Length: 359
Image: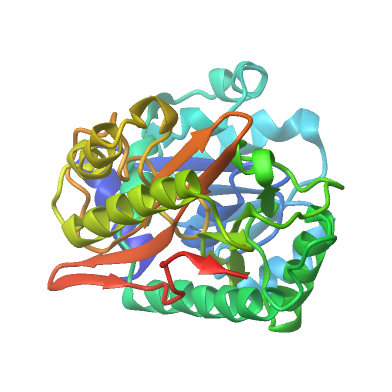
């Protein structure tokens, strides 16, 4: 069954006969790409009982004709969008139409969607649930993104020395990913010394120094699919507190990896790592979720190993496992791997060493 056929089946289950998916300047690019095959930054997908349509502007006419079988409808006048959508839905008999409220602005809904002469129903879960379960082909692309990222970091490690700046490390890592045919999944995080305690710290002009941690969180994108990896290195010999914190995170990460199976409740998986960190006396310094879904977006769908997710993680999900401890004005440690939770077992996609490495 194709993705469009599976999507239509989900629509029928919710008594919907149409759907509009809006993507403005990459606001919903991944879902548009996932469903239609079109990878451009602007698209409006319309599913009706009679067909599948893509509305886009002149920048993308040729690209759309190559990438998607959806029928192209040229977009020429923003003021006429409401009437254009209304006519498509009306002519094809779409009366109950789903849309993704989480990806629409309040202004756009008022200008366009609220005036459509149909019954509109929020239906965000359809796409989120579909994208949460990866096909073998999707898992292979994520694995390729992991491989590109890992090879790039191994090469970059030869550059990490006292006196180099965080920005220089970031630039070399990006270069190594691009050299291998990948793109950046997100802005690289490089934090050294006290800046490694900034959970999402941007690389700065700070120079690396002997005796401090260097935390690198990064990912590669290959053919639209992402990897997401974090490793923390010691530049020179670490002190006792650094070793104690690292070993705590290492143990929490290993136990969570071992516990990660299809069907486990997301919050229960988070608690595996959180309990270890709490018992070591660092509970207040682990403030984020254990992990998230991974795919065409770095945070690919709802759920994952979050303390607020009370639902089972489905078979076929790819998630991250990334506990951390962040001591303000001292240092931070995070270790992150990408895991595929298959119906017949879990496969860890990342292969880089997790033990404390001294550079």
